[in-house]
Length: 243
Image (cartoon, rainbow, N blue to C red; front, side, top):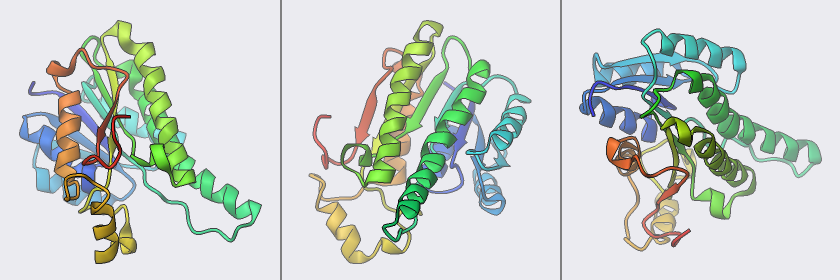
């Protein structure tokens, strides 16, 4: 399970960085993608020579094409982890224009970044044996609307891809995290009271960590997971049951 070519979008911080670190620890080569050059450079340096990086906006087709060209210079891709995204919708004023902007921004950040990168790399995925892991969210089950809706779209895209690629021996699954600390996701909202309220929703009485999600992604990308495809793998401490 070593020496693979692994691509992780949103790889500079949080879940993406923990995932890249897990693969690099296995002896894999990892490419980190994201928008911020300084963050990606620092992350790659912390991982070591197994890591490289490319900065671009993955909701923009031209940037995705450039990322694809950079990635495929090193050969075909064994594992793709589409992790980029977040709840980027600003507070809106209740106008139709504001609501449209909110939904549009989250669609671009969560759906387009996953779909465009995946479709760009599909011709370059290892067949058989390739692994695609999309990063969804518990929000797909219960909102909020503009963000949760985009993660639900990621789930349905996962189902579509699994059906398209199964005969090629490429598996496609999604990991759906619940509340995870030590990420940039919640920003200033992550007060002590806010974190405590989220932890209380779990059955384990503790928050998730980026390494917990990375471990699930690593398993789905492993040879042992060859019979698992078209699944949404929930990692949420029991905050949502059996869905």
